Length: 374
Image (cartoon, rainbow, N blue to C red):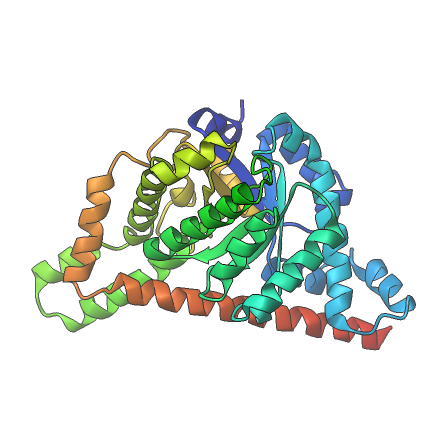
């Protein structure tokens, strides 16, 4: 049995944080579903930008779009993305059915240029939902102040949502409340809630990257050997601690009376999804953000390299809730060292929106270059 399929024994679903046409047409996704128990796919503008800019498999599709008279690069991109997402959704349809609608989802993100516009986000999410026309689609909406009311409205309309770019535990709570309010709206209006699904995508590795940099600056400023050792001991600890506190909040929220009432109506919990789980610091184990975050009712969406690494030498064992007090201690020690986690997570949200926006711009530029060369 693959180490990846063993994660199911601990209540965790494996999703793939990657999509491109050759994976869909060459049988790669079907093989991952059959052999490794992959149960979902996530995408974002950066993934599509890399695939379209570097791969030849989109050349024919790009030229076909242009022959049809389409000149707007955003519409061309959307056409290609919808085709890919629909293919992936169809290949995961059996997983969706076999899990009773718990898994088998494919995520498609609204334009990052709409991250601060609630109305535009809702309108684009509705349009993409209709265009893909698959029950196992999730629309990705960022956890910005403008994104949260969009999440509530979309859930209220029965549109599955992947809430992305989550870094702060406090924001995670707001996301969970937005999901709950959306479901409550459906119950009040007499609409079913048993087929509505959502995940809260909590980003992991980027937190260590940011916090480690702050710790290194502090180590460079101190003359105390003891303080330098204490700071060094905190490197690589913030992301897992932050994630464990988010999961503790999930357990608290799903044990509340509010949730029990919804659950009695058939509502599904909004699972926590661990995103950005590829290790960015080569000094850390390449399966760190999988090994340490295995637990019930969670999803880990892995980039291909992390998936391959876990298949080879991952440690399928539940660890998520084993060190909750240690997690609190890590956050307290970081605060004592001058690392403000609220400031860190706020910067990371802003950076995440900007990075996706930049990738989206590069993607449109790549399409323009192909269009001009045709």
